[in-house]
Length: 124
Image 1 (cartoon, rainbow, N blue to C red):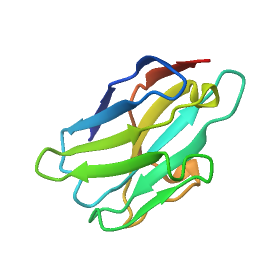
Image 2 (cartoon, rainbow, N blue to C red):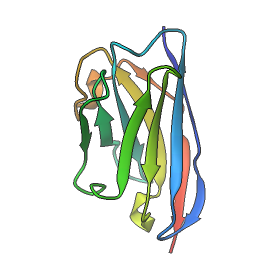
Image 3 (tube, rainbow, N blue to C red):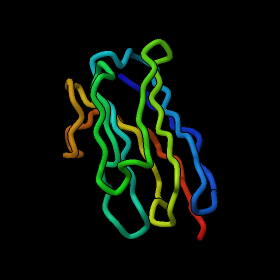
Image 4 (cartoon, rainbow, N blue to C red):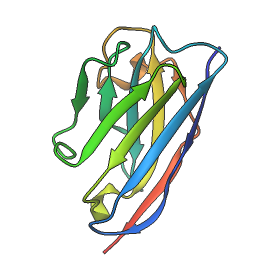
């Protein structure tokens, strides 16, 4: 069993930055691809960014490319999302998720474990 806990969300002005963290416990995440997934008010959950279990490959939705960077620290069993140039459209609950596969995928049902989410609010 894996427990995922997100932190780092908050309120920021447009153009600002936030760094989200996802700490895992209960099991090492070495054999799991990881992803950040978000859900805006009134919308479905959407894939934001993902990273392979080795950390060598990263993927991002078109809406965040060039602004968000995903990374992971195997020693700390933690994943991060550095979010720069934030826009009001980034306002959402951001979840981290883990899938027992090498590479992340945008199909959300592939993810076996989910955190509780952290709120990101970007004001204009």
